[in-house]
Structure formats: structure tokens, C-alpha cells
Amino acid sequence: MFKIIEDGNVATPAGFTAGAAAACIKYPDRLDVAVVVSRVPAVTAGVFTRNVVRSAAVQVSERRVAGGIARAVIANSGCANACTGNKGIQDAEAVAQMAAARFGIPAEEVLVASTGVIGTFLPLERIENSVAGLSLDTDGGSKFAHAIMTTDTRPKEIAISFTCAGTTVHIGAAAKGSGMIHPDMGTMLCFVTTDACVDAAFLQAALRRSADSTLNMVSVDGDTSPSDTLVILANGIAGNPLLDETNGADFEAGLHYVLKYMAKQIAADGEGATKLIEVTVAGAVTEADARVAARTVAASPLVKTAIHGADPNWGRIVCAVGRSGAQMDASLCGLSLNGVPVMANGMPLPFDEDEMRESLSSPEVTLCIDLGLGTAGATGWGCDLSREYVTINASYTT
Image (cartoon, rainbow, N blue to C red; front, side):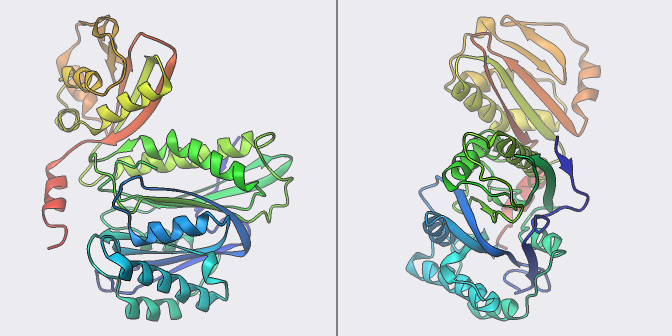
């Protein structure tokens, strides 16, 4: 149903261009300012961090997304512009004005995002100089994805095409996220573009639903960033009939596909990660129970270290579910590791430990928990916890 476009990115949908420049915000000679622009005003929607500590960019963009229309996003890495008071707000607005002046669009239609160190101010003069020389084109999406990286080891981008209401439409995206990832909408930014024509209320609802079952099911380290931002711009250039709750199921499925891809990419590239962990919970009483159980397991340091060491210490997984707050009867619980049952009806099952250790040494590990209480389920993603994670975060600002 969905065709992944080779080398697809945030500038793939019709009417979008992107680019990036180096402002030397934290590192010399590194792309760290990124811009994507729609040729025409786009319907916009967004989901932002629920951390009560909220970056200046989140506060500015959330207000502008509420207006329903945007033309551009300017994002920077190296400085989160968080815990910076009124000056931080003014600086975020100033950065939006720089992009607006450079590309001839209203400042109120420019969204902003920032990621990096908390408690430092943006170097406005260097950013302004970089924006002045920044050029946009349809091939600039890859530069955009590179410029928003912090401790990420690789860019995260995708674009798909599919038929929606009889018309071919596209969805493109770029994301970053490696540490401080436990989104509640780490540091996580995700920007989505589409040439589909979408009703504003449906776009917001579809984005929220898709985020809840994808990006909000990721945990690298259990910490929620003040900068988490997910926004989508829909410019309608594809010319399809207006999509809403009555005819937009295919579009929402495409959006979910893109965000699930990004969720797994972010989890797999967690700081110091060597393994992607996928946690599936079945048999829950409610979907909310399944989600909280899956996220608790994915975030558990004991589970993450066991997986890092390929240690089949499965009791840690069951106990993480037990403290999650989800309804659970341990006597009904079942568990499998990489498809091998190790527990059924609350009792241990025999398995070959040497074979299990070899299986858990693979780059992807699946944990499947059956609560045996109902029909609801959910899937979450995380990564192992390595010594490299400690090294990265023990010297992040030094």
C-alpha cells in the first residue's frame, strides 16, 4: 500500500524545499541550522512535550500551531534554548523572523524548534549569518536531517507515496533523537510534510492518535525533554479531495507508518545503544494498560542492562510490568524472549540458556508479554543500556 521512496526526505512532497547551514552553535563546521519551507501556506498541527519545563521554541511554536497555518520550520541543534526565560522567547521569535525575512514569508507562519544543551542562549548573530547564506531546494532534505542531529549517530528520514481518495499523495519526515528520550506528547524532534489536502481538525486528531501509538511508545532513558516537538505541514498541492474523519483513514494509516518508522529509528539509535528492543504487550484489560506496561519495560534500567549483556534474566521483565500500574495477575502472565516461551500461567518454562544468550546477542530483541486478562495490546520500543551511554552523558557539556 505504501511505497517507500528511495532517498526520500522532508522535502520530497510536492511544494516543499529544504536546506541547512553551519552557525557553529556548539561545534565548528557542522550543519546545525535547518529550514523547510512550503511554497504555499500549509495546514499545520503539532504535539509537544508534557514536561512542565518547556523550551522557548516549544512555547512559540505551540502558540503558532494553534493558529492552524504555517509555511516553514527553522530548527537548530546544539542549544535547546530552554530555561532561558523571556530572553529565550524573544530569541526564538527573532530566529523565526530571520527565516521569514530570508524567504519572504510572514513571521507568524514560521515554526521554531531547538535541541541541545539546556540553560544556554542562542548565538543570534551567528544564526542570522548562517540563515542569510542558506539556500533551499528539493534536494535539501538530507541536509535538514543532518543539521538537527545532536548525539545521533545517523540521520533519520523517510518519504512514502500512496493513493488517498483516488489521488497520489506523499508524506515525508525527518527526526532526531538519541538521548533524553521518553516522549510524552527525547530530546526528540520530528518534522512531517505532506502534499495532501487535509482538514485541520482531522490533521490534529490523526497526528495525536498516531503519535500516541508510535513516538510516545519510545523510551531510551526514561527522561522527557523540554524540547519534544512533532509538527506536520499539509500544503494540499496534491489536489486530492479534502480529507477528514469520514474519508481520511488511508492518510492516517500512512502517517502512522511514517511515525512508527521514526519511532524505531530513534529507539535503535539511542545513546550508546547496540540493540533495538521491541516490547509487545497483549492480553491487557485496556489499551492504556498495555501501553504503560510496554513503556515501563522499555524504560527499565534492569531490563535494558540485561539485554545489553544478553542475559536471559526474564524476572526483571515481569517485575517491571508488575510495577507499571497496569492491571496484572501474575498467575496468568506469559512471556517470550525472541519468540521462545520462558513463562506461562505465571510459571517458568524450560529453555536452553546458551541458545537464548546467543539469540539475545542479536541487534534486535523482541519481548512479548501476555497478561491473560483481556484483548487490548500495544507495542513499545527501547534500546539497551551500555557503558557508552554513561560516557556520553557524563561529559555532555564538557
